[in-house]
Image (cartoon, rainbow, N blue to C red; front, side, top):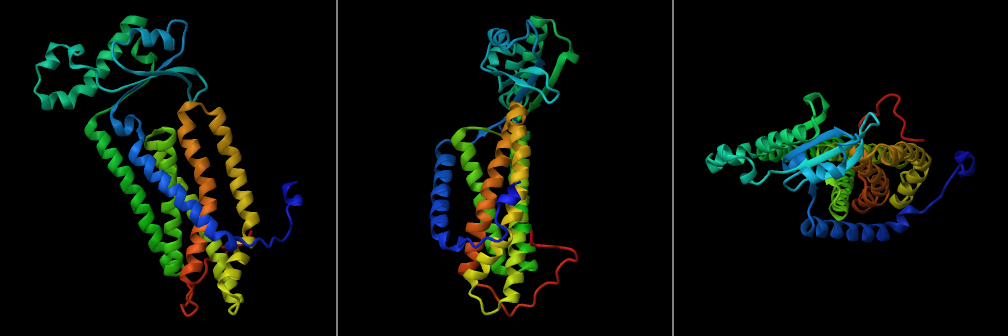
Length: 329
């Protein structure tokens, strides 16, 4: 039905709005850096260290009862598990040393720092077992990440993002031209930084699943950008005397239907996960939803605008197309 309403041929002048798009991006990037510096990211247990315990919600195992019995600060909320069961999620860092017993307090400071997370986990588990009569099998989840491991996970996650950007820079440089490579990677960095800024603004939990979402955003945005670039190259070969601005506008209009269909159907699935998947999946699905929106925007107003500003090299021998690949809708 949508395709019947959508015109068969569009002639939108995207590049006439590139100045507006650039200003909007500068504002969003500046705001993102500001929020990252002033508010910071709300690191989950994966990166901040600590413990996550999940229990099935029962008559006596409720959020209120668990909060009442915990002798130290803990983030306790209800949620819906991946199997649709109602659960109680308990998140906490290290408990005060005074609660962890004389044996722990007698350890050297270095050993205390290394063992604090595990000892706190054991202390909390024993309290829950004693208060609610729980068995080990009734703990749906019990994960503890120490400070050293969490630091390594964060470093490895950031390394994965940087390596992905570098490899894509090299691929686009080889596949197209250096101007396209600069435009594509600038658009990817733009998407990641603005997504991080939004997480800092809303204080959504930033964990390993968020890193996975960011890597997915990079792949999705690059796919959209490559389709546009391939069409730009094809139209450049056909219309050698046409100004670059018109070539890029033509390519964007030719791929517009494909972009709307791909982004729209993907968003429908992600919106279902966001609203029905519960808090466990909400952070990742939110990052993907925002990433698709900002990725589509950056393919048009960042990557293409940079290629227009840098120009295209008509003298470079093109890399042979992959058989069967179609950049058009």
